[in-house]
Amino acid sequence: MAVYTHLGAEDLARLIAHYDVGELVSAKGIAEGVSNSNWMVETTGADGAKGTGGARFILTLYERRIDYADLPYFLDLLDHLASKGSPVPRTMHDRGGASYRMVEGKAAALIEFLPGVSPTRPTPAQARAVGEVLARLHLAALDFPRTRANAMDFAASAAILDACGADRLATIDAALPAMLDAAHAAAALDLSALPQSQTHTDLFPDNVLMLGDKVTGLIDFYFACTGPMALDLAVTHAAWCFDGANAYLPQLGSALIAGYESVRPLEPEERALLPALAKGVCLRFVASRAEDWLDTPEDALVTRKDPMQFVERWQFYDRIGAGLLA
Image (tube, rainbow, N blue to C red; front, side, top):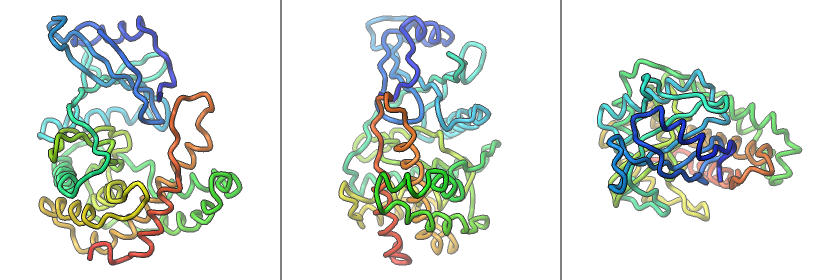
């Protein structure tokens, strides 16, 4: 499981006692994710009534790739979007009003649990719905008062691959070192003129909860940042529009972009750069997955993700070029 820090039942109960959510009933580690420790927590609910379903939350203990100075941005953004009707989980504040607490020297946040399941084989209707919700999120976030730089921008991806080194990358796959030059080319792109908002930048299907074709939750905002809206769309396109064998699914690609543009039409400069953005975001995931593959502790019960999946998607975008929006 993705639980690096093990908290006992007493530790969890003491933490939950700081919130007006009732008493701890159960807590189970969540396997998904490689950066933080996560638990599904059930409590008796604020009224303390046992046996009536209680309340459920996600407890996250921040372990890696999180600067604690960024936590107010992440958690306040959730509350801002939720207040505007976006399907995102609210942050539970403790009785003192704090959005996170320190446990074992690490920050911990309790987040609202939302219903729904993540699609494993998305349909065009689901892709269109996600495009619509993403565009609405971008518009809802335009007046969010905080900003955050993208810690995983294209320059960072190139730096990560440089730090991994060609020799170590080759131990994962012989084709990986060739991505170094491509990553530096992506880092040279000038994105400063593209329209910006607050962006999720990690909207994989497992970060979307759905009931049928309706989006009930967008989760895991810990890569959120201020940046180009088209870059967020490119991330979502690269994450949603390929099957398990990395074959491109044009019906999903068209539906995703059509859904987005039904709410917020792309500007000409965004359309022109979308293929290059898609290549760049593939390299971001190549870099982060390669780093995790090489650096995840051997005793961590975490399923590592193969970076070669996004090498193949980069190769698709490189071939299709301007035809991406055809």
